[in-house]
Length: 242
Image 1 (cartoon, helix red, strand yellow):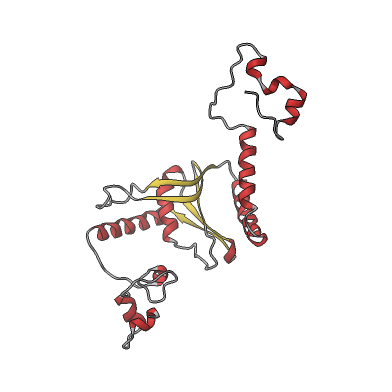
Image 2 (cartoon, rainbow, N blue to C red):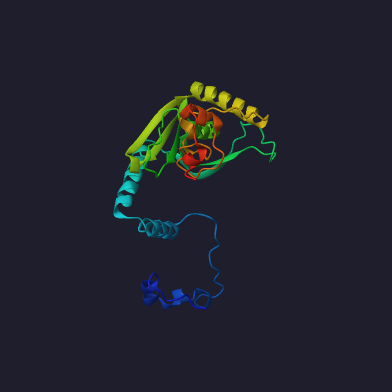
């Protein structure tokens, strides 16, 4: 079957009819074998796919994407980093989950690294500012990927949150990362061992048992948070809006 006459190959076919059917035009011709090498045509196809997705955003959202891309471009232009995107990794440094018999896994948005430099980048699209400093999620990611930069003395964590005007970073030393890792391992062991200790704090905001959760609420509400927020007698149904 001849190659389909299309917009992308019209010039080629109009200049050379044989190019539409090389198997017949050239005796014993064999098409190239796919070897996995990324070629210009592949890059072009990928670019069109990205363009199509971006055009689904509003003009204001596109400005946010420009802010993100400019930030990453500036960072990547400083070194010849190796790049990992949407990389899933197994947290082998944590104890095995007794329910699954496996280590937890996590996926990070972007990791840039060399032998002596590591950047962990997390994209946030919400309008409520997420603080980069002492961010446990980023510490978790960094602990999972720190082995990629064995000569680095620390890791730089980044939050890219343009809708909250929050494009920030924090450098964390390996010593600080190790201290956090020890606390995280202790927490995992305690939870796996059956600990049900409450610890109401600023981290409760998305917990379904929290009275003022920003997500959906369960019932009954967290007794520790209720006692902290409402030391006087309270009506839980009224708080839940029932």
